[in-house]
Length: 610
Image: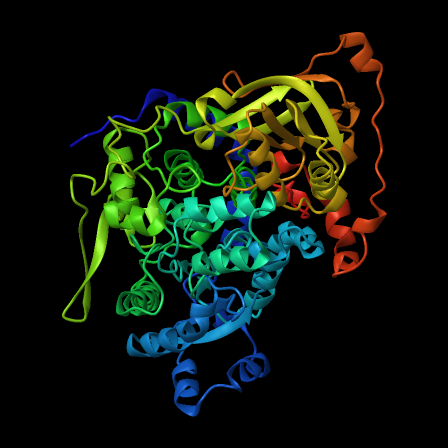
């Protein structure tokens, strides 16, 4: 069956290809120059260098590695046993080494990368390291692979900054093939609605800390990814949309036979495809259309707003230039096919049970809303990803996903979507450019015209709330929260108090050059405002009492003051000295100083990434 691509998608795709042509050609020339022309990667090294690389390996493995035709796989792991999503990676290297050996290859842990948890650091100083941990992970991945001992890469990561960092690092070694291996979500705990209710009751002083902690531990209760559809699970969706996972690997629970089978299969598949010459280098496999497919997936599933930065950064690492106009225009033609918290009551386990990503991918392909003509780790075409795995007599086989959704309150067909558009919108006006995730905002809360109340720190907002000073209609402006100011921490602490005010009948919106992530949405929030305050952005010109029109339907965001007066205003400054010291923040001064704008990925790397 021949399916015609949606004309608007074809137009946007061509525009991105043309825009990216100079940087994409430069990137491809770089990785092609690094190829070994049919030789294994480590065969370029001298004998002394190789001896160092072999020294720690068992004698039987050394014998294998001495053979010039045996590929060696490099494992980059983000294992630690503090972050629930990454704790399951502990056993993966042993499985991979065992499976690689069975299929005529060897494998080594090339190195580790840090994996921090935004849920732990939320609202505290450590959160100001979070965004730039992505760049540290990218560099850690590059350090691991820089030994040039490896003919393919296996990249293990799940959460918010970790997968984008791994991808950026892997693309620096894009002349070799690679597969990304997920760990899967934890089992469902208490419902997200109940968790949110307890948080709000605590914020109102109606329940104590014991009740709050009991509720939180009932939600975050075991190894695996958090089950709401935030940045971590959006990462997993995008890796499947880009074809670097095995099909439907994202949402299989850790510590199950299926998870071990998928991990082993990934190692075996990479080893075999390198041996038979079918493996395509990662940087060549991932084209402009691959990144556009990830963007489409973000819209079809109502994914995290953090990826308006992370997807941009990953794409730039491959020479592909995306901007927020692309996000806005693609959102306008992509139907919203899933309802998962914070866009609904279900979690990712319910979504997977209803049909999951294979169902979404099939619907998009059949509607002409996804590029099928792309390469993936399992072959050409996204049709491979419309199937789900089954473990039959100990062996994996993939079968077509059912034609009907298992639950239309969670997952729908493209001709009966929850919304005709993806729910992410570009906001622009005399304040600057930002983004909003409207898919999680109630209809009556999407347009607000109210006075601004200006803050330079989220703690100031919480203190004003506790003093009872926010019982009114207002636009909460929180500035000096961008990458250069303080590392752009997420501002989740604002959601409960602003949600309470909204529930009390007040019209409330948030306007910030900081982040709120895909876990927020109840309160309309125009975030990632660019330019940020510290880079001369107009958000620094807003004064308390200014009337702000916040229209997420039309995508306009303006301070309603006389144009001459607005142009004559100067930015208000803020004392940021407290953000530069303590909890390791002093070590990240150069990252802050070099950071690009949110729309260009908030990257600390220069050159071709800028």
